[in-house]
Length: 435
Image 1 (cartoon, rainbow, N blue to C red):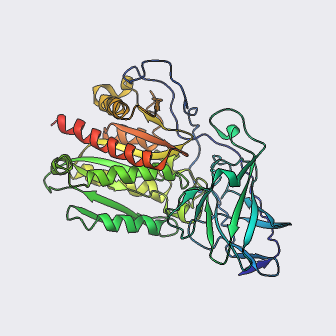
Image 2 (spheres, rainbow, N blue to C red):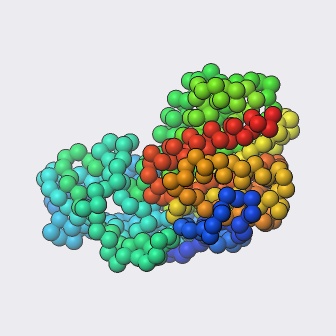
Image 3 (tube, rainbow, N blue to C red):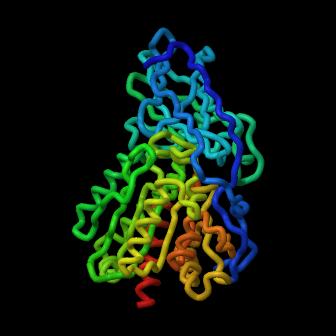
């Protein structure tokens, strides 16, 4: 389906809500001086998690300049809600959310090409939001790089270092386009198909299997990886990622984390003989494939549904964990990988977890010792009720020390991979030392 000249812009009313966070700093942490940098977000409000309406975006092609220049959102992971030609090779694109209220994570992804090669300028415009994500460019939809800064213009720059008020209200990017499409995206595209391809590639190793543990609202499978070298081990870890679709940096770190545990090092082999690792790499495949800012197809933030379990994604993991606990597994660690404004850890305070939770802070310290070049702050919670978020549910229900592991939106990709690798190595070391 194709629209000529300009699409009708269908608006959504976008409010803000808080991201997963916590409330206190634990004395167990490695912070020796007053914390600097990103301090985390305020405690998350309790919100209902029963289904809310979601408006699916229209999918198709916008054509301009007598059908010689094209924009499209007709691919998995796309987000593009309207395009207008402003004249003089200038275009405005509109980005809206799946429903409201919603965290301000304005995801976008689209393709553009032309029969008449030239430079064009594209203005990114959002309803009731600002331009959080710096554009990534690709010629194949797989390999992305940040747009050259000389081709980026911030309009009405923000104030401060972190948060939605710190980013520009609008952004303009200049692209050299031709007959081959260029992908423009808020972050790298990791759709459910691409994630499944990664799962399958790792599952060629004899000690890794993968299987479905449930289905989403749109009947996409919830894939789980099981990693171990011994069928006798009953000590287990639970790792999840991408409850929120745009949080790709957390996924990239998680990917490196799992690849390190699955490697051929002596440490990894020894670890797998004594521990089973269960991984759900993509908790929200519907949201990822539909280009959502935050929610699943039930219109809900999944990381608020770990108490009521109204959504199929959280139910699938809950039922899986309950079954494994019944089968005799002891969960010794849990991690939920996310992305936010900068690297930060959200553990549970040892005032509520006791000695059992100390390993989380030992782990944070050991990662910080090995990666001193980039400080990650710690914001611990001393609240176990409501369970609401994954980390708290993991501990309360299954007594596993757990953490929300957050990576910055703009953290350099090589460092994300290194941090995931170091995090895996240090966790394996600490857990093996407790044997």
